[in-house]
Image (tube, rainbow, N blue to C red):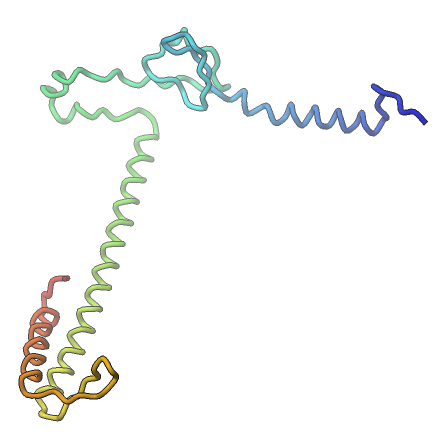
Length: 185
């Protein structure tokens, strides 16, 4: 039996037709791109509008319904230095400025919330350190024998010099962390 070359069966034709339609449908987003010629005359394809320095005559293709937003030309440095501050930052037309302002405010609010949360964590840590230092100070002032575990895992009792050094260190922690307006470390 010999297969004939170049002939498709009916199911094969259907598959080829479906693949052709799928390829055509997938290429539609390409039509929604900008195309222009740059200063060197080379064609440039992008999903964003061309820069302001490209004249309209060099714009070869635009997405359907898209108008080119003309950005203001940058002013010379000497002119911006002498211009008043209010006119130095012109507001763009349309809702884009409102969206940017809203995003900036949301970012500032998120940053403020993050800083507040970090301050609360630090305040809780200071309060915990204060409570532990006061408890340690009370133990040191009570006169009971206090032990530590050395590097070998053995218990050692504090002598008077070690007890005084520990009391001094504990008092510094209390002064730092227990003050009403204690600053974060």
